[in-house]
Image (cartoon, rainbow, N blue to C red; front, side, top):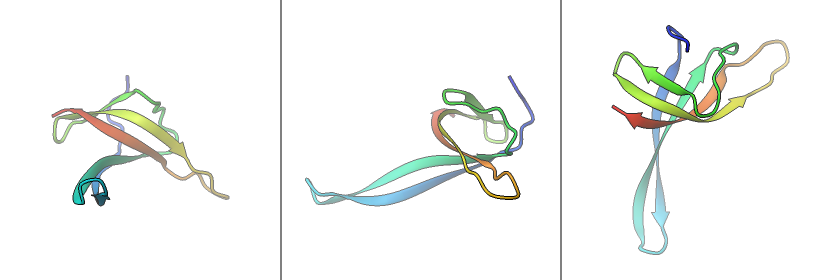
Length: 81
C-alpha cells in the first residue's frame, strides 16, 4: 500500500440520448492522472484524502511518447464517500 502519491482526479459528464425513450441521460465518469512511475493496477483502491472518497481503478492506460514518459491515465469508479 502506498500513501502520499500525487494524483489529479476529475469527474466528467456527457449527455447522451436514450433512443428508446427519447430522453437525454447524463453519464458520469471519473478519470485520474498519476505520475508515470506510479504502481497502480486494475482493481487497486485509491483514496482521496482531501474529500474522503474511495475509488477503485477500472482501467489503466500507459501512453507512449518520444523523449518523455507521459502520466498514467486511469478510469476510476467511486465506491464510497
